[in-house]
Length: 366
Ligand SMILES: Nc1ncnc2c1ncn2[C@@H]1O[C@H](COP(=O)(O)OP(=O)(O)OP(=O)(O)O)[C@@H](O)[C@H]1O
Ligand SMILES: [Mg+2]
Image 1 (cartoon, rainbow, N blue to C red):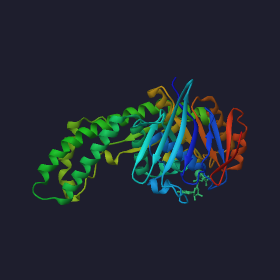
Image 2 (cartoon, protein in one colour):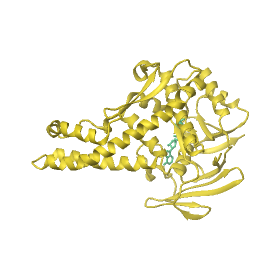
Image 3 (cartoon, helix red, strand yellow):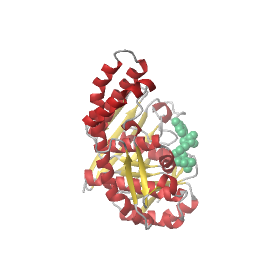
Image 4 (cartoon, rainbow, N blue to C red):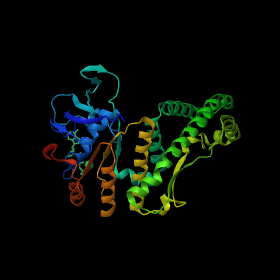
């Protein structure tokens, strides 16, 4: 199995990180440090390099460049390793440009691995906000399926156009709607089919992962809540004809895949309403680890897994299970914590590398 891992990383002018080389282990890397010292920044540097964007919302170059730096250029240099092969990748960003180099040659390609970021707050957002769920699912399907990303882009453009027709109204409105609805119906049918396939793939892994990590005797399943489930393009087009008068009156598209939602079924009950905070976090973690397994199934290679302090709400037995689970896996993990108790658990992993970050500086590692 191909599995490129980040071996070395050095960031210059990236947030509060000092210019120094992080030498990562191919397995588990534990990153300790008090609040506000640069743990998440380090994960962000890896994410920016491997996924071409930050995981922080609305973050651009101006937030990432070190505010105290004099050189207006952000650089991340790295070495990746896969068995006996090595490759160096670097990223240079300024306010106006972004350049990537593979073995010192200008390249457009990405690094050989992408990364998946696990954020404890995402669990809360995933369970409370349908907008967040939609965005989370869309971005994760897109990461695996280029065609989905392209069709979603076209759908959003077409939907914006439809809504602008509706907001203007007028005599020609109905005629214009028919033309755009042909496209919208076609995209909607394709996107729904891809969402269903993605969820089917995830469900293969969700329950076993949930049981495997959290030893829970429950079933967990993700479902798509969509009116257009298994509808073809013609049926969706006919639906929009039927809906036309109501939409013209409302001046907006009221129904469509842009309003689809996802539900976690926990023993047949809606997890968003039924589960405790700890169970919600376990369900969310199971979803992400299932995603990682699906990723491997599809690309025969694991992503790099970035886990940002997941200790809150999980009890110590669950921490132990989570650590045991990570120890059995063959992916590279960077896991951070500011929690002293969780740190003690992580310290017990013999086959892992430990880092301590203070004010953006790596002060010791073992
Ligand atoms: N552009 C920047 N330039 C310099 N420092 C920055 C920049 N952006 C953020 N910081 C600093 O980075 C620090 C936050 O780092 P980070 O989020 O990695 O902390 P953390 O170790 O993950 O903390 P926590 O345990 O609270 O999550 C803050 O002190 C912040 O001031
Ligand atoms: Mg943090």
